[in-house]
Image 1 (cartoon, rainbow, N blue to C red):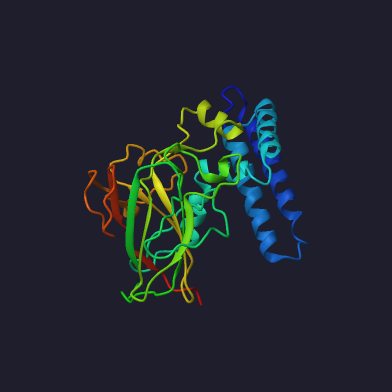
Image 2 (image 1 turned 90 degrees about the vertical axis):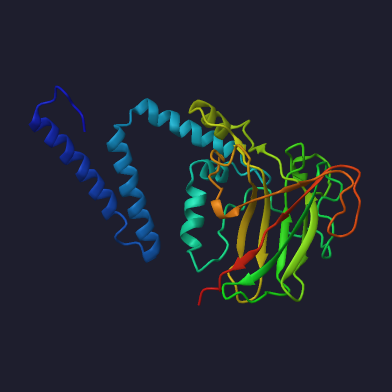
Length: 300
């Protein structure tokens, strides 16, 4: 607390009043029948009051904060979740994921789900095409799904989705297209393979209050190039993760803090006419990446 010209006794009285208010608010939750809810509310109040007292928030700043949260609520609907976007850009989403997906051997690290996952994506067979006509350079993706002991996980369900070369997911278009997303199952040796498009950078939705906040603090809305994975198998922790493109200049500034060093892989470029792993000859350049996935066991 900084009051350069405030007498010490007045400062002490001010601190006493602030602390008294905090303690009265904390006591208001004493009769909460839900122990966990009471714990959460008391911790929230302690940290909120600590923030207010540390920065000596002004009434005008408080009002602007309320107006900002109101705008976040107004723009949120069934398609756009601005509160999750706010959580993402503050690193809260990644912190929650980090805490709830503890390290276990060499299990693949988790990252954010993002706002564009859609349940019920079409199924493709091994070697099939996730892009389904989405614009972009073809990319061959292959790997295995194994457990932390190295044993293959056959029959694991892999959901894949990505933005197209224009930086947009299919659900961001006005039509009913389904492109750049699909699901498939691993083979008997835990293997998987499919065609997609080479990931490219794109901005998170930044035409709302979260975008205005990023601009105000001098931050970019851009996400590093990535391909989304969601992997499920009986007896294993469900994994939500990405694979990122080595050499992407946005790896250090990904706006939702989703990059993990272990998820950055080499996307090897191949010229037009170079035979593909499945025996095709493409007219244009293409890329390939190997992304081996390790699943942690399900919690007891």
